[in-house]
Image 1 (cartoon, rainbow, N blue to C red):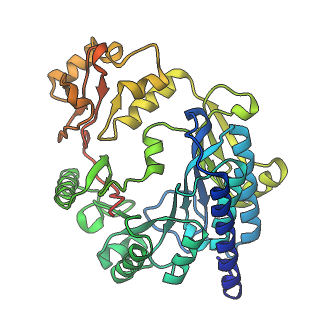
Image 2: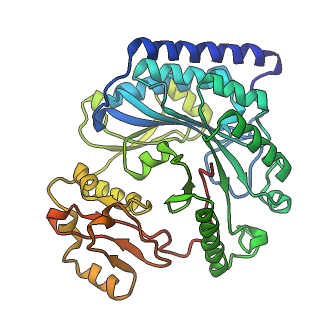
Image 3: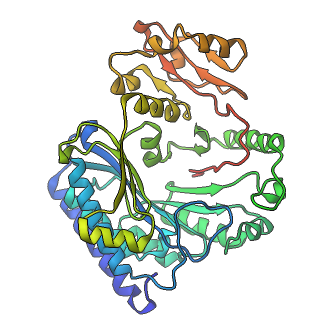
Length: 414
């Protein structure tokens, strides 16, 4: 929330910072791909919004005023601290989420990116995503974010029906949404995603005092949406994510593949091994929720981590399964061995009585064809698993809807 009189200076400063980062990248030259233990994605949480939307359960605040300089300084400090603690040497994607990060100034985005590049290495072609509401950024402001280093936009359309938007508490109209989308596609061709929701009130779903959804109708809308997107050339690469022309979100893909990620900002989550502090076990980390308290902790300790939970091997493998089964690729033998080199997927699933029971109920698919390791078979109900003897590179794959989903977000609609 920059003051109007400072916008031009802020945008110019952002462009200069981004230019310095690109020049440093050129001087440094392309670096070889770092090992998984020293790579990570970075999530940056901007907690402020103009108003509260009825459906949103993220960590957000509607302040009377924002000390953006203080917030910027703390985001930079926490990024530097956590990168040092993690021992991460290469950041492969950055995602500015919220809240409404498009309310921040481009100079804040540029300062964070420069700090990341100085503390580790942020390649010039890394995916840098900014979430935006259709009402918050003008075309000139979107261009300024591009100059600051953003190369991908995620726009919270949610719906193109004005009645539904009003019911959700959104401040934009369908016309606003389409105008912002057109401007974003012009400025970031092939690098724009949108959020769309199904199962909304007019579609028979809502929270609170409004009628509960009809799960069968919501499931029907989900299946119809999948069919429409497929016909338009979109790949459903995850349960609620679609993309075409290969433009899937590489940042989100890190989540689905259980890669390391650092979370900075109030309430941000992260999962990484604190190698820089001598750690050897992956931890789940949560930053302090309330912005003012978070800033105080960052100023005192260099970071606002409120909770650290070491993940045991079983917990980590459960996450590998839960995340991987959401994707169309599933879990290949090679991917599984990154986390469990001693126990193969065949060992886990090959003789399982539970697997046999699910198979008998039609809720599980065991596919012994070798090519199924890289291809997906979508089932309306049930889980899709491909199991191979140890010599045949086993894989575990999901269906795209194994439960009756009543609300989903369709993203990466390029």
